[in-house]
Amino acid sequence: MAIPDSETTMISHLLSICLARTRALVRQFTAVTLLGLLTAACSTAPDRLLAGTDPADPAIRVPSVSYRPVLSGYASQRPVGPKPWRELNDSVAPAREK
Image 1 (tube, rainbow, N blue to C red):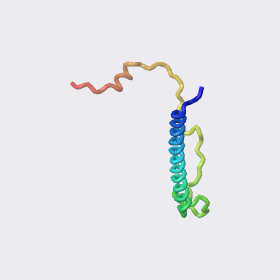
Image 2: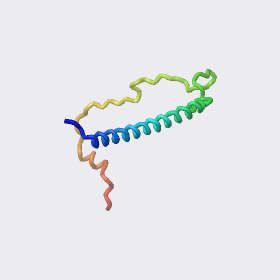
Image 3: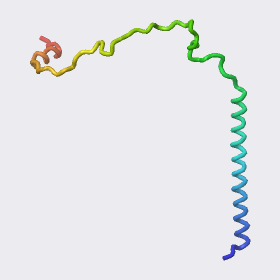
């Protein structure tokens, strides 16, 4: 089946419009990317680290290192037998007004 000339012309016109828009977007993207790269190339690195003193400097004072056992401050949490509930309840209850 042959396509009439008017449809062929319209299809080629639409394709040329899409191609022109795509070229414009590629040009814009390229321009923005080049501008960003040029701007980044012109910037300078900071003279020293922003985090503080130089970690390679042996004259810097550091806190002393000390040994602390892993189990220091540990309290056993083993189950115990039941305690009298009334005394425990009374010890945490608010004071009664008389």
